[in-house]
Image 1 (cartoon, helix red, strand yellow):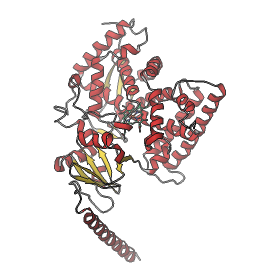
Image 2 (cartoon, protein in one colour):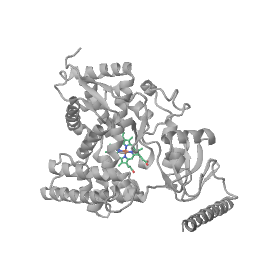
Image 3 (cartoon, rainbow, N blue to C red):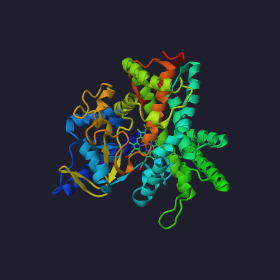
Image 4 (cartoon, protein in one colour):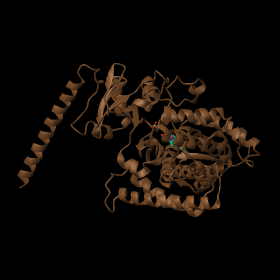
Amino acid sequence: MDNIVSTIIYILILFSTALYYCLSKNKERTNKGRAKLPPGSMGWPYIGETLQLYSQDPNVFFAQKQKRYGDMFKTKILGCPCIMLASPEASRFVLVTHSHLFKPTYPRSKETMIGPWALFFHEGNYHTHLKKLVHNSLSPEALRKLVPDIEAIIISCMQTWESGLITNTFHEMKKLSFEVGILAIFGHLEIKYKNALKENYSIVDKGYNSFPTNLPGTAYHKSLLARERLNQIIREIISERKQKKLLDKDLLGYLLNFKDERGQTLTEDQIADNIIGVLFAAQDTTASVLTWILKYLHDNQKLLEAVKIEQRAVWTLNQEGEQPLTWAQTRNMPLTHKVILESLRMASIISFTFREAVTDVEYDGFLIPKGWKVMPLFRNIHHNPDHFVDPKSFDPARFEVAPKPNTFMPFGSGAHACPGNDLAKLEMLILIHHVVTKYRWELVGSKGGKVQYSPFPVPLNGLPAKFYKEPTTNQ
Ligand code: HEM
């Protein structure tokens, strides 16, 4: 019996390999006479180079490929043929100038989890409308008003750090960025709703990166159930807000008041999916960069001293921290701002993004076939010595001169560029102000600079650290 099974498996493998070979030959023949595919290797039948990518640091995988094949190369990941783009010009072509030839693309399981109406999955009118609403809710005027509340959230989170060892700094930063996300979306939300959102969102978060098997007991299944509960909670919040006839200028307010040119409003599902989408886009990204900032500052003590001097001047002006930070002060922290830019470059937490060609596209003499994924590799661009001298060294001074066009894209580029970039930077400025004026911190057991992917890169084990309160006298 065992023999029969293994023979069948053997025949199936042979058959599928032969079929794959014929199909790829056929594809090559149909491509004859047109531009050729970029260099690269497609790896094994079906799985392509998925194992090579996931068995090592993905950045090493991409860097090795770029070294071997140049700035444009093909590969196959998770069954999808892909073209990687490691030049600023090619990224601009895909994301900005010829973005109509490429559409956003996400695995179906992720789309289901976040909600199919979230703006990242859309293009055209719907996307433009939604993007404008998110932008309006995060305009400089809106952010200015949020400064005291963001400051209060940061101070309250930091107070819990005083108890000693923080086993996972990234998790602390996630709590913080979640609170700020809730603030930007709902304004001052009742604690019962906040707790319910927190509890269910954390279940969704756990299942988001799990294998998408929708069977009872699996993380994915639990996540889907929690996602349904989130919809219910958001409906209750909406209903309460409608009853109270509140006209708040937070994201929920903008979503509720929207009418398109035909007078059409958004459905509750559309509102809920976009709220979850924004929370999702805001939390781990910001938390990961905040964690890296603490690591970089810790590892560069001279720089930390200089940042302290800049921040202590503000602190002194604010009557030794008695007065709250102002929006104008956050706009005038030049060194701290450069530290943030350099952290975004060094960590490049969004290493790349995905699009899919909606038609055959020719770029730089190469063919990008319809249906193939294209991946602008932000990290490779940020770490290319042609664009950033000595890219492995942490040097905020490099941002005294603006980077060359399209070489610095931590928040993406084009129609889908991040609308939350100013909010994220504001959180970073406020956190740095408080952490360097009030605390000294030591890293615990993360000397090697190892990185963990969850899925964004974070320092190993989320950067365990010890925080010590500094005496609050002006020295
Ligand atoms: C350091 C923190 C952050 C980083 C590095 C980051 C990075 C990015 C990048 C690279 C994109 C573009 C993805 C693509 O083109 O495929 C993006 C999109 C997006 N981000 Fe952020 N982000 C951050 C924080 C935030 C925050 C705080 C919010 C909201 C409050 C936010 C909301 C969004 C949304 C809604 C999109 C989708 C935009 C669209 O599809 O039009 N992000 N982000």
